[in-house]
Length: 259
Ligand code: HH2
Image (cartoon, rainbow, N blue to C red):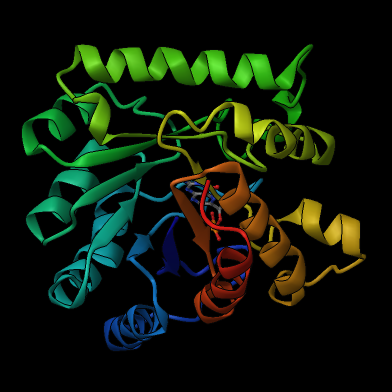
């Protein structure tokens, strides 16, 4: 399983907002994530936490592109964006993977990725970050989330993206209650014949289980999810705490070889 390290260049991300607001600090943090063992670093310029405000394309590009350009010579960089214009600028600056929490909703996104020949993460969500928690209503969350992801994968293939470049993500915490998140994680082993990414690091449902209000203190719960993702056969785990995740997985995989 590959480790995607999180580098948010936003003033308002839920656990690390405002920490890397100049380019040099962001690049130094990204390089440290590579040194700790991240297989790739995911640069995001728009917070998608519940209730977050939208940013303009220009503002998102201004946050993301200089960091991608300076970090890409040091290792593989993905860009966490819902906008094709931002994705295009990031690819030009050296990004090699697009992480799209909207599952390719921008009509220009899938054709862009097909032309670029890069891989894309298609994540499940409903609505927009500021409204999504109102849409966390499902009869059968696993069946509905994976049916929606299948539809996005069909759209991606129709746009010319080969199956090998499609990574699916159930979108832990995006229009999901804590019970939905747990059901999706429990169900994960049934879904990993495809390439699957799990992003649960420091999220609120972990705090709800452990009684921790502060996101930065949710390390142990985040590690528990990473070990589960490894056992379930996930291809990627998206985490804030790269060094700790690498160490936990080193011991876990020594005991239980990859599925
Ligand atoms: N979660 C967040 C952002 N991007 N991308 C994928 N593929 N999967 C996720 O679960 C996911 C994601 C939210 O976490 P974070 O980046 O830490 O916070 P914020 O959105 O506040 O910047």
